[in-house]
Image (cartoon, rainbow, N blue to C red; front, side, top):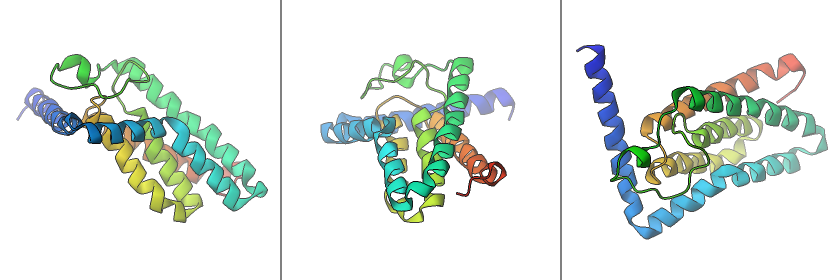
Length: 183
């Protein structure tokens, strides 16, 4: 099988996954649920987790949290750069059968910034305070699903966003001691 055929099959599989998950949004209660998840994933949920870690760890942990916040902007820079370079249209813009369930925060689809940040925050905060994983892991999965159910992303956007998020989280965790920050 040549590269062109492989690429076509991958794109077809990506679209089928998107269509299948977007079809779930035809049920109003499911669409409403994932809209709430998506909006919380805009930042509210992560800020609450940040405050919870700070409250549990105390004032002495302020430097570590500042490091996490500053380094987290690395993830934002990466996904914004990729979106501007790849300029992949969102699924609802290309396929008329896909229902847009929520307004997008920006114009392009690849990669999913919501998923990138959800995975990154879950890994870093889970490393700092493992008990939070009970809440954060399910929420992260729901954020990733919400992006496809709402017609905003293809599965490949979400997968790559998760891979970038986990890579950035690993860099955060591994470089913290170099900068004198104990996570």
